[in-house]
Image (cartoon, rainbow, N blue to C red; front, side, top):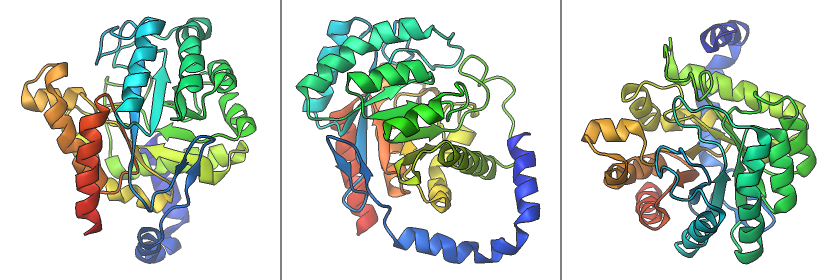
Length: 311
């Protein structure tokens, strides 16, 4: 069933509850979310937003093009991001750029496992594993990772939900149309924000049914994943508070993405000023986590935006 048809079905069966929505939104906005707990850190959203630093151990990522493809380079980058103030390090071994081809679980594990093992032993910052495969997640958690970031929202591997539940770790559920290989083809929404919200609500329910505690779930609207280059991504950022009704922390990843490059006519490594603007807007509109490449700069942008929001 498409996101739009699912939305219409739910609206039909829950029309009586719509009158209560403004009060529910007000309650969500007034009551801070409970913390997300990892072994090495407690993420208390009443304090500030948090910064997730990206380490791509891949030869074909859009942002760094294999700059950290070796274990030594990836470990050095993880140490650098931790020193710059990252609150969590997200390590991935499979590119999810538009058009990317999948890699095997064995290849993904070979790329990331030594990096996770080394970093988890050397830094006090928790590590997240960016994967859609249960076996990769299982070995990453055994090696020291403390969170799973699944861009498929537990859809690509039927064992992922029970694996995360058994590990008792937080999980990020992201919205995406299609797969990384197909997500930028034939993009169409009848109601962008509603369809993303309904999709994420359904995935939250699926995660809970799989045994994952609801207070371990983080949602991500999927900037750049099956979205039109400019309009959809800007709309999500402008109306990010629409996802407050889900009652879960929101992660936003805009760093160096194509919609910034197209607007500014800027290559990947000249997109940091544009990224800083999106980070500030995301935090001002309620983001709890921001996922970035340049931790030091974006952490400062987030802190200023959070101070303005609190004022």
